[in-house]
Amino acid sequence: MKRNIIRALAVATVGALLGGSAVACSTAADQPDYLLVRYSKEVGGGISFKECVQPSRKTGTTWNDQNFVLPISLRTWNVRPEGGDSDKPVQTGTKRTVVPGSKTNETRPGPDVKVYTKTEFYLNTDCGKATEGKSTDKNSPVVRFWENTGRRYTVATDGTAPDGGEDGGGFNAVGWNNMLINTLVTASEKAVRSASRNYDADDLDSNVGGVWQQMEQQMSKDFVTELNASIGGGDYFCGPQYRRDAATGVATKVAWTEQVPDPAKPGSFVPQEKSGTCPPVRISITDVVFADAGTAAARANVSAAELNRQADSINSQSKVDTANKLKEAGAEGAEVQRQQTQLQLEQERTKQVQACAANPNCTVVVGGGSGVIVGGK
Image (cartoon, rainbow, N blue to C red; front, side):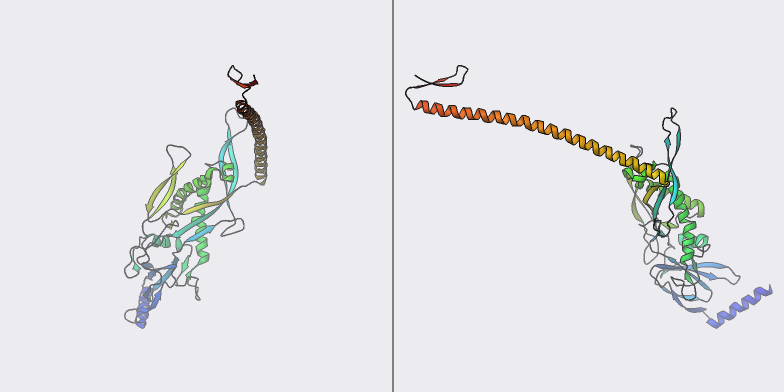
């Protein structure tokens, strides 16, 4: 009890030193790519949500305020062989295959593959409708994210700098990456493993029939399910189509297209228009390779042999086609020669008839099954 009284006196003293309004200074979410989430420290030691301050908006702050900055720009998590945010792909199983020679259609797991992905997302910084640049909805997505997840991973510390600032306060990139690894990345990896088992390994390796796009659609749905299961925040992250009103900070309704199963053609997909304020996070497949080098080499040899077979078949067919065309050309040439000979004979007979007509001792006989006969009298 005595301790609380002393704390209360100290608070009152500080408040008096700062002036009757207890406004110490003016601060801002200075960077256009960051939102400021503000809390108030209470006399009893707790803190409570006060307001969100939109980017580049100045606002008065009191001595007992705590300020945390969160990013509003498009973010990515890129997994690449040469290293991006990570160089570690998701190793996962594929569709089961029938055992060769099995009379009972016995199946076995498909070969493992390594899947490289790129995840594009926004943190859902919707804080409710703002008045004069400030929002106070404590049940908004960004406040729930901060209280349930962001604070836990120290995504930001008390301060307004986007890079930690001289005093170490502000956005914490290390904490942000740690949060992503334990939430978004984990959920996307589980989504990849869940979806890959529906597809043939060879199809994935070669992206046959645009199978990557089909798998990406399934992964987006599974991602939300996994994120809800792990942190209860399926709306914490949104896809690249996400938009927020610059003045109010409220997420606006947008449209996007999803590929959904075609009920008329199993295994096929058709586009479907969707709309809402938080489109799905985009997880794009950038490469798929066989996990086992021996399997990859064997598949490559099979592919090379098939390509050679196809090339031989094309060459053989080409030779057959060439021979047929030459034969046709030969037949056509003989017919042309016959017609030319016939024309020459007719021209010669015409000359003979004309010469006979000019000679009174010459007789022209027409018909008789022999055409035109020219003879002397």
